[in-house]
Amino acid sequence: MERRFFDKKCLRLFTLIAAVALLFILTGLNIYADDGNEGTASEISQDQDSQGAGQVSDGESSGEGSGEEALADDETIDEPPLQFVSVKKKIKAGKTFKFKANKEGVTWSVSNGKASIGKKGKFTAKKYGKVKVTATLGDEKISIKVKILPKKVIGIDPGHQSRANLSTEPIGPGSSTKKTCVSGGTRGTATGKYEYQLTLEVGKKLKKELISRGYKVVMTRTKNDVNITNRERALKLNKDCDVAVRLHADGGASGAKGASVLYPSSSNAYIGKLSKKCKKLSSSLISAYCDATNISNRGLFVRNDLTGTNWSTIPVALIEMGFMTNSSDDRYMASSKGQKKMAEGLADGLDAYFGY
Image 1 (cartoon, helix red, strand yellow):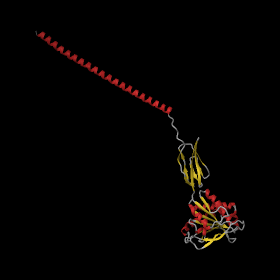
Image 2: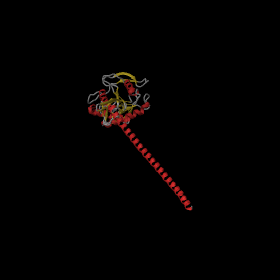
Image 3: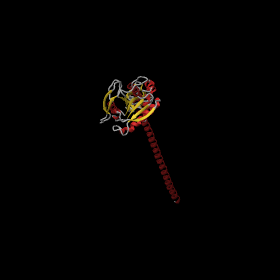
Image 4: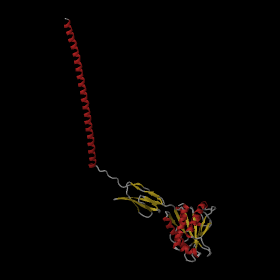
C-alpha cells in the first residue's frame, strides 16, 4: 500500500518535472525563432537600403551625364565680344592713363603722334588735340576717341607788323592818354632783318615747341602784312589764354646788348593787381631764355605805359630778346640755330612758371 502510494507520488513528480522541462524547451524554441526572424528582417532592410541607395546613386549619375550631354549637344556658350573695361575720353597733356580690355593678348595702337600707348595699354597724352585709341585681338577691333586737353593756353604776340599804324589809341581801359597803335620797330644792323620779321619767326618756332610740350597756342598774327593794334592784340589773347608773351627786340647804341623783360608795377592803374604774377612770369622767362641762349641777362624792368600790357587781363610779360643794333646779338637772333634755342628757352621759362 505504501509502495504503491510512493510509486504514484514519484510518477506525479516525474510528470511535473517533465512538463516543466518541456515548457523550457518550447520557450527556448520560440525565442530562437523570434531572434532569427528579427535578424532576417534587419538584413532585408539593410539590403533594401543598400539597393535603394545604389539605385538613387545610379539614377543621379545617369541624370547628370545625360544633362551634360544635352548642354553640349543643344546649347552653345558664346564668348563675349572684345570690349573696353577701363577708358578715359578726356586726358590732359602730360598725363598718363591705363586702358584695359576684357581679354588678354590685346594689341594697342593710337592714330597719331599726339599720344603714345604701350603694350599693356599705358596711354601717354603728349599734344593738345584728338586721337583714336584702338585695341585689336585677332579679327576683333574696337576703338575710342580721346580728347587731349592742353596743359595751358599760351598767347604769343609777335611784336609789330610790316606797316606801322601811326594812329593812336588809349594806353589802358578808360585812359585819356594815347599812344601810337603800332610802331615800326627796329632793324638789324648786321643782318638787315626787321624786328617784325624776327618776332614772327621766333613766335612760330615758339608755338611749335609749346605744342610739342602739350600746350595750346593762340597767336595775335601769323603773317607780317596785317594791321592789328596793340589794344586789339591784348583783347584777343584775353579771351582764351592763361598768360601772354609779347616778343620784341631792342635797339640802341652798338655797345648795348642782352635781353630784358618788361612788366607792370603794382601801382599800375590798369593791371596792377596782376603785377606779382607778371613779375613771376617775367623772371621765369628771362632766366630760362638766357640759360638756353647765353645771351646776356639785363634783368627785369617796370613799364606802366605799354598799351598791349595795360589792356591785358591775364599775366603778361614783354621780352626784349636782344639788341638788333648789336652785331653779335643780331646775328645770333637771325640764325635758325639761335632761334631754335630762343624758342626752347622761352618754353622752358613757361614750364618753370607753371611748375612743369
